[in-house]
Amino acid sequence: MVNEKNEEQVVAEVYLPFEKSIADLDQKIKELKHISQNGIELSDEIKDLRKKYDAALKNTYAHLTSWQRVQVARHPHRPYTLNYIDLMMEDFIEISGDRYFGDDKAIVTGFARIGNYRVVVIGHQKGRGTKENIYRHFGSAHPEGYRKALRVMKLAERFNLPVITFIDTPGAYPGIKAEERGQAEAIAYNLRAMSILEVPIISVIIGEGGSGGALGIGVTDKIIMLENAYYSVISPEGCAAILWKDSTRAPEAAVALKITADELFDIKLIDDIVKEPLGGAHRDVKKTAKNLKEKLEKHLAVLTTISKKELCENRYAKYRKIGVFKEGKPRRKISSK
Image 1 (cartoon, rainbow, N blue to C red):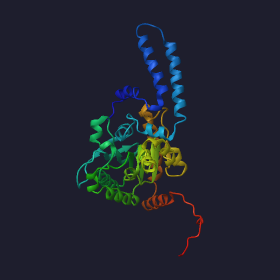
Image 2 (spheres, helix red, strand yellow; image 1 turned 180 degrees about the horizontal axis):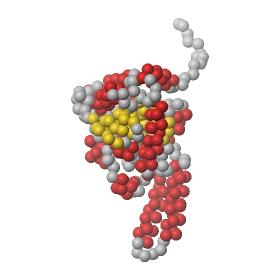
Image 3 (cartoon, rainbow, N blue to C red; image 1 turned 180 degrees about the vertical axis):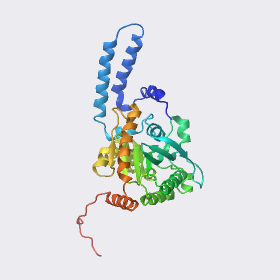
């Protein structure tokens, strides 16, 4: 779990590339505070700089590009699944292992309670720092992670409990060992199983929503997305490398992919957006968790009143509607010869 006091101290030191003006103002405020400790009165100057800092933060985050939102989604101190479980839920009991191969630490599963609802929780979990990220596989799950998730979903179905999934992964683990153990099959099996699961399922994209790695726990009745998260069939860097053989064109790819919450809501790929505090979820983790909890309870209140048959029918119809295409006449006649 995150130590909130330490987290606040560290976050102040970590700025993204587009936050340079904000970082400069923060540094000046710190310098004046340090000088004022020697008995020099600088409260008015500090107050003025604080106003400029707040204005710069507001102006910057009011005009974020798609690529900048990707950077916010990847912020090293952005809250992860275990943070949200700690702040929003009670009585969490973790479940480990897939009963086939082992336990994948990139996915956390278990039982918990949110408000008046007993639920099953599944989520990608990244690490803080190199050592923990290696332990968590950087949030990229192996086949046993998806099989563990499926095992817990089946438990939810047995005990008639709603499922909440937290999506935060650049993609499924791409290593050869994962492929040898059936990575594609494990994800595909989950897609089928989730489509007919007879309990409510809600997914929340809290950071990165990358490709099949996200879909492996993302075929749900409602898809909620944090304001500065992203959801995409491929990372902007991967897309740029394929299209232009140049990963540095990732900002262009991010625009073309339409991966932001607002864009995805407009095309009805997601169902709801959770507002983040000014400057991103990492600047006020507790407020972000509060906003998300309210959304989850709202959707649970509706979904838990729907019959099992109707849940599955609605879920099927939801995914059949995704995607837009247009039929037209061919530009030229194709010769039969």
